[in-house]
Amino acid sequence: MLELLQRLCAELDSGRCAALATIVHQQGSAPRGAGSRLLAGPDGLICGTTGGGLAEARVIEACAEACETLLPRFLDFEMDGTLAATSEMICGGRVRVLVEPFVPNRSNSILPRFSLAPEHASAELALEAARGRGGRIVRPFPPKETAWSVLYADGSSAGASLSPEVEDVLRSAPLMESAIVTAGGAPYFCDPCRRPDRMIILGGGHVSRPTAAMAAMAGFEVHVVDDRPEFASAERFPQAVTHVSPDYAHCLESFALTEADYVVIVTRGHLYDKDAAEQALRSQAGYIGMIGSTRKREQIYRLLLEQGFTQTDLGRIHSPIGLDIGAETPEEIAVSILAECIAYRHGVPSPKWRKDSAAPGGRICLPSL
Image (cartoon, rainbow, N blue to C red):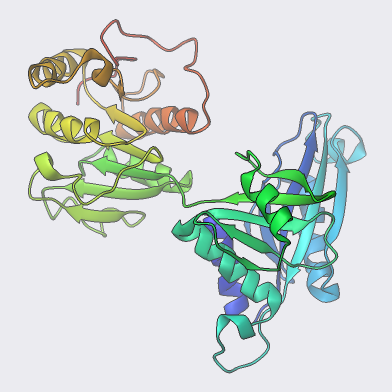
């Protein structure tokens, strides 16, 4: 969501119209679910996807048309008929796609936000939520125009006005994914909008580089920490924010960790891993993973137990980190790490083919590095 809003605002700031296409309803089997979206303009796709194939090609065409008509519209697709067959996507489901055009401010002068075209202002307000404030984007369903209300997580709101009663219902409705919510007798399409999950990779070695690149591709906000400036550099990690820490015993002090944070421990030695694990266990980090052999893990666990940590504490650590796919190279290990983190993000139970360890928190065995 963040990347799409950033690209949308960039298009509008450059004076170009763009249209956002969002899957608002999915029934049965389909390539992508509700909340999947793409951004396209008169010249074609800008970023994102609604599933690919001929259906997506038609969505992109509809976006170009919406940039001309400036009217939102729906597209309905059956994924089990001719459309699916010609696009090699015989899924057997149905999807409904909402296409919303966004109009840039036509003035060449620099104007305050409230003076922008309503669509331009809506995009900027939503981007503010995605960058960290958090909240929900809501619009009447079906919309007659592109008019978003942004309900921020701190209780404030902006954009198109809503009655207090409707706002209260939309703000309090349980919502993990995009969904239609009825408030005041009318339906609204609601999009949760929050900052990306943050992955903090401790150690800038050979496994960290592909892990950082893949994590960024998977939508994580990536940070890399090392005590060596040459290993924590923007040149080495162009997709991440890099930090040089004096030592691993204090490497997480500058991060206010929450359940949305993923700590990936891949330092160059087991004592550094122990210091990093101790820091992570004293935080609220949702996911903690540590690389290495079973033997190294047991040494670290013994040290942590001696420092007063409990078996329950150690159970928070995914170690050896990653899914057991027989990974050997740094790139393969990065795939296994991202697979586990993505499963954790979506609340997917551990796969049945995972090798569970009898040790607390131990789950699989990867080779020593």
